[in-house]
Length: 335
Length: 296
Ligand code: SF4
Ligand code: SF4
Ligand code: FES
Image 1 (spheres, each protein chain N blue to C red):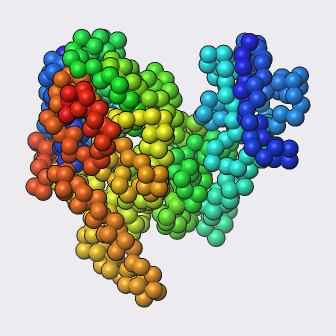
Image 2 (image 1 turned 90 degrees about the horizontal axis):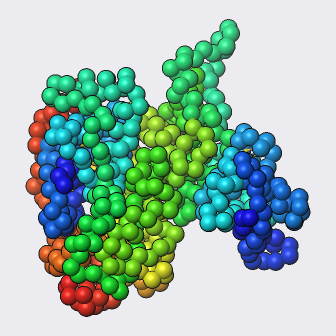
Image 3 (image 1 turned 60 degrees about the horizontal axis):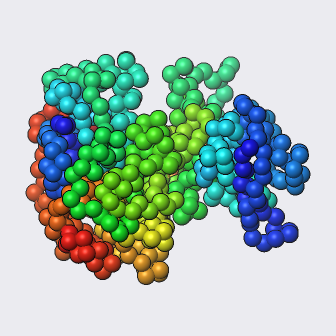
């Protein structure tokens, strides 16, 4: 016999959610969703959750089991029951509506924000638009997303910032950024490089861990980053951070922590500095506080604090031994 | 025990006390760390944003250097560990890709074979049954009464297939080490979360909010000190702690130690030698506990 500790919520009856325990012994091989169904059918018909396909296709049944998002129909009950108990809760980062059902509206709004459809060239080909196997394989993984919201639920950035597009929308964005038939690649990566986009992802890897399909958003986000850098969309802290970081390794084989923050906020190369001055003058003229001022002042307190404690990285930046070989690898790969 | 030590950049830069305490711990435990002085930065998941194959080539080179020395490789940074591991998995699972990378390495005299050596975080070496026994036998100053909260760092946990921990959603390796040292582990939900460091230059507020939520959780769960295996987490949780709004509002603060610093305290090395005073945050509570243990 196992205990299913389920978070119950029905605002029409009681304002605060509470946990209710159900006893049920899932037969070997049955899924978590089967167990929920059994409990609903035989113990409490008011228990609410979403389901449809029962075969990990429709993406309806994602819930949190023991604190982490999973598809209830994709896991065997016995695999999630630990010490005879499983705790079931609604997905995170979305408002609960009733029991395990949450409000997906913000999720869909963000999907819509990335223009989730193909924008092909106007001129129509005689027949279909061809894609080679290699071209298709770039978007193969992101195409597998079933919009279950498991990634969205456990994303560490969404826990603190609603403005973040989030893993599912960004995986969907890669589906079109990487599509050889789409004409808006550059415009797409420009939009995705704005605040709330790709560079706000904190690499926590939760979305990769929770995704029931090969879509694994974090990997897709990194693919978009590579495209953005290739397309020359460099005028933001995230892109400059990546460029400065890689440049530092190219010169010395290791990271120069003194230079990285300064270059990240805009002081990167002549072109970067020209851009920085132009952008910030524009902001000044519009009566806004130039971001560079905020950024520079943002670096000062932590810098001083570290200086006082003797934690500033050595001013003379040493290279790794045999740095010439490192430089050679960069050259060989045309970086 | 002899290992090739991949130091990473941060232990040579902003958290040099990590390097100091690692070497002292190793010495006290009789572990021989051979520093990999020609290994390049792991790329921290940032070089791969620009060019995935570049990051993999640099990491294949580092792994090849350890192979040449015929030594298992130890990292002291969760990020280095995760990133090197990711490259290793990519190379080992795709023969054609490995050949392509090896072609790039050839002229430098390195070739990556794969499967010859193991790649582990220092914590994973200590958290084995043998490692824990060794620790217990060498502890001269049990950290009694010290409540210690682990902060693992994302990259040693996720993706779980590449993690060295048995149950990356609910790991116990760090806590097992704390117990072996005589300390009391504090279990709290945020110990497996992100510290926010990767986006501190892009979205400072979100970054600090993540760190703040995690630290508030640790403190409310009773921690005297938070211990991490990742110097980037350390920067986020310690160097930036005075700027974290949530903690300011709650009037909280908590010191953050590197794992080898905590281990070394129990091995009888004093706080000063471990450069714990170089950290930004200290609390009277922690200072008192150290003094009581005779470790100040
Ligand atoms: S890796 Fe990025 S997108 Fe994925 S869950 Fe973490 S912060 Fe969110
Ligand atoms: S990316 Fe994966 S976890 Fe996220 S919605 Fe799609 S299928 Fe679900
Ligand atoms: S019910 Fe369709 S995915 Fe689970």
